[in-house]
Length: 324
Image (cartoon, rainbow, N blue to C red; front, side):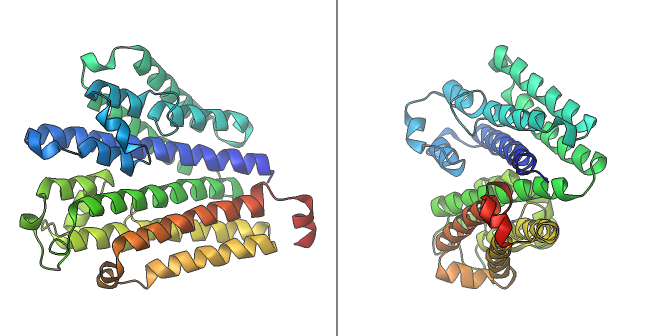
């Protein structure tokens, strides 16, 4: 596969995953703000900004309308919904011949819907309707992709982009939330809703579409250590970091088998260590050693894997291919 094709497919998937994640997190926190007393919302938007990788200090300077504009329609914000969907569409257009007609039509339609919302007065209605539409549009695109494209090398690069982005954004979300809401008492195995804000713990699960799945595993008792275990270590839930690591390794192994090289083997080893750390970790050990430290390590490793993928398969020099 040409490196430019792999690059476009990879970033198309990353940008769409980022748009969906931003829409979901913002939508959850709008709902939480409506459900909680006003004093309970203190510090909410700086925390949301930080969890999305933005400068949290800007929350002090912006009113609610301006904050929502920043999340949804600010062209200069690289993680705003409109920026991500525009970038995803631009990448898809570069490889129009490599994706199915259904994929292009759906992504193009989503792009024009977001553009139209940006030009209309979104705030005369309910912004949550727009955020829900973005989430649904991204999920439908994933389904269309899996159903209408061959699961070959190009599809593997889409998987790499989707799940690397998901792992990184989840690690950031978990890290920020637990730094704000968990203390020693909150992380005890017997800790319950009385030791932390119950709605906020439900909120972090909903930010990962995980509340119902969590309840099926642990019942409806919300305990911070169980929330951490589910979002980080669960091997069957699609929005856990462990699940994402498994999918990244599977896609990378498939790509490497088609285009073997020493650089490819190196990034496979990095990915294997990343996945092994998640496979053999126990939540009590993670908490004892510091959840923040592990989330920082996971984010560093996803960045290292991203760099390795580029060196091995996308931006490799000529001599790399000769060495393989």
